[in-house]
Image 1 (spheres, one colour):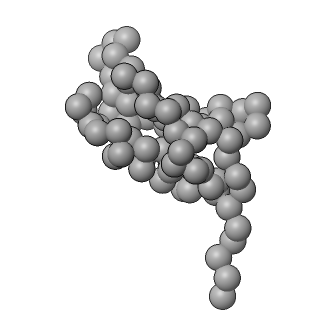
Image 2 (cartoon, rainbow, N blue to C red; image 1 turned 135 degrees about the horizontal axis):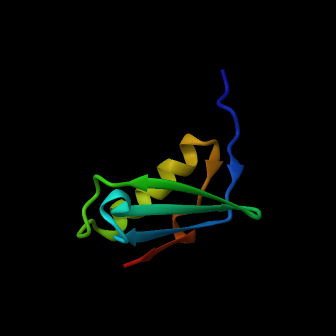
Length: 77
């Protein structure tokens, strides 16, 4: 049995959001072509390390069927 091949994703940016209490936490912005898919991570604290944030972005992409190179992830604090 072979696993389905993942489609390539372009890049991702992980951004800290604290505009209001409803949208506080890390958000992954995954760029696939001209589309941007956003994933919220309110349970990850502001002090979460870059390696863990990159892993979150890669896992988010994989859960939607995309392959994301960890080197293509930018963390913006």
